[in-house]
Amino acid sequence: MNFLQNITPREYQLKILETCVKKNCLVVLPTGLGKTLIALMLVIKRMKEFPGERAVFLAPTKPLAEQHLASFKKQLPELFGDMQLFTGEIKPSERKKIWHTADIIFSTPQCVANDIKKKLYDLKDVCLLIEDEAHRCIKNYDYNYVSQEYQEQSLHPRILGLTASPGNDVSRIKEICKNLSIEEVELRTRESEDVKKYLQELEFEKILVDLPAEFDEIKHLLNKLLNEYIEELRYRSVLFGPANKTRLLELQKKISGTLARGNKNYNYMLGASACAQAIKIQHALELLETQTLTGFNKYLKNLLEQSAKKQSKGVMKLTARPEFNFIFMQSNELLEKNHEHPKLREANKIIKKEIELNPSAKIIVFTQFRDTANILSKNLNEISGINAKVFIGQTSRAGEKGLNQKEQKKIIQEFSDGEINIL
Image (cartoon, rainbow, N blue to C red):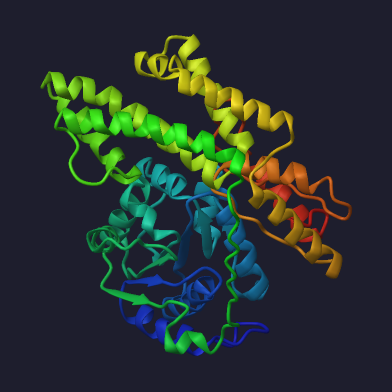
């Protein structure tokens, strides 16, 4: 491993590497514990064993592929070999030229899959295929296609799958292994004996806040509406057992499937609407209890807009209920009086104190919903010494545009440089 510069592999990384050298391996390792270094060490070994052949490193997005390229360039000297990034912005004819001169290719699976289909090059001289975020190979056709073609074409095939989250479903993990021709799984958690000694102990503190009394009346009316829809589902003999969110979503899927197959059962047709409204009320309850009053109010407005456009008879009936209109008016009045969910105030207090104690601190706040991130960011930016920005995915939703890759990269760079101190 004399090509590695300024880095000493950990014991568990070397142990995992031993397996990867001998067999196609799926490495399951939590984020930040060095999956990329294992991949890098395997690249060195394979390319030493098969001089003149190349390695291909696939990642699901262009920014991730760029990140891996930068990491390899940082750790390996230039004399190790030519490392190149494949993107859709590079002309196919140019990619074909690069393929025959590069030693390590970093790409998205779509790019390589399309090139193979067009026979721009083959995978005969690829001695190692690395597939990052390997759990995506269940839904990602291109990941599977490249893997299968590689197994058939390569003179010296070796596959390395990397993931931090394969899921808990055994059948799902088996499917990943089947799609990638995996022979061995190397799994570690933060609690694994050979990993623990390298980690700082994480401190967890749970802070509980009480819902204000002003929220109680709204909560009571929402539960009243929810129970009416639940009782209707039971009366129509379509719901048995608990009526939690997961159960209602499963029931909605079951009813939709039954109706789609042509079964026009009267109870199922009426049950479909009752189930849909129950899910909406349960979501409203979740927003009120665990998120923000602003987000809750916005959701009610959205339902009223749907009703005005006559998009759903069920929503029209729900929003026509006196209880619904009272709830909406109450939430408006509370917002006018500057009421909000108490956890926002608690989060502001904790972050403000941390920045006062350590002005150079950087803090990442995870939220379940975008609306929560937006209101929290707005509140934090009113505090001296804080510059907060919201970081979200690329998907656009009603009234809110997602961030493109360029915007995401810019925000991460600003956070890295200290221009932003709260993400």
